[in-house]
Image (tube, rainbow, N blue to C red):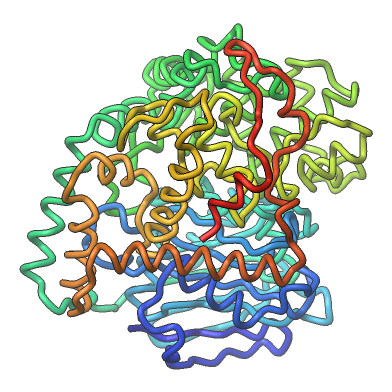
Length: 574
């Protein structure tokens, strides 16, 4: 196992520790959530000196395992005031693992206003002045840091939103091409990094050897089978590489579950203009890239490059949730406007979901017409300028809705709901309500059985079976996050009797241990127990595990309602 690298951001000093027994065998989200529970007072101010930012590669990161390059970042969230883990692809997870670093921890906070950056190499850790980069967006700083430290260096940076410590601020990672298209978006963790006055983290694993394996042949055999099930599943082998996550736009709209005009109906009249099919049509015509990986070793390749009408690069990693938030939710139908909003959020360091839902709150408040894409673009630009309205928008949907006197604010634990209406995809609705992370589709993706018939079928319009579905998926997702695997591997795992065993086989071959599938379930359960315990200490109750009353409205086209009781939802708790 690796070591813990702690950075005291006030004293500009670092120290390296051995992994204690209490953290042995943990990685990714398992490690971040355990360390936050053990080391961060649950009632502390998220932007104060007692909060910490814990950055951890997964247990399989740095190995040849396909799709194992995801990075977990944990903290107390400024947005939810509860525990948070957010993760993304990029380059840093695998590089930290090869450097032997199981966790990078940012502690304390400076007394002055000077910014620093952290540069980690094989034989050194430096904490350097970074004031020359203050005020830069993520595109500019990443370009400058690659020029300074070399291409393919791992980068994590914050933009203007993080510098202003706004609650919807993201942390962006450089993708394999050096673009800030990979976001630790949810929960405002960019604000925590900004509070520590860390503008950038640079990770260079040059000169590092490959990670040793306890049984290289067994690992190679398991990984070969692992790659096969990923490439041969219709979702991970065809749908996602062919259309990215935007493949879901038409599917969810057809299911009557695409939240439109702030969750008033499940179908968008102009869905064809913002669909995955339309996106790919534009990409091909403009000579972009239909499929690329978000980190080395990805075999799913659901990311892409979207160019403007003149064939110039506009954005990358153009996700379904982003297209929905800036599209159907606000009734904007121009895909190029939506792509520009995505680019601005990547540049300024903003969560696209909370920002898009916040724009819907602006429309609810009567300050912008529904469907006004150009107006949305101008409002997002206010965030980088630091204007008063920019600060309101940059603090997310709950803050914006409150500021404008809106009563239909789709949030749980102050985090905006993503792109599936909980009344017509009830499995993911249970996850929104009960996840310790706040409304988060990735915490337990009930769309699998509700819509895609992956891992079985549960009627999305009925309450029956949804609590069990969400609970099992939340446990499985936590374990996947701990391994450093992409969430989308779950599609293949759920439909393959040998899927979980292959993950176990790779872990056993890597570390020379003897895990069973039951151990993986127990790991996922323990992660959720730790996260729920933190939130309990922070003052959360079952009242916080609820959807807003707006979801008691009848939802067309299926005329469904949210009717789960408080006690129903508590059955999810592990």
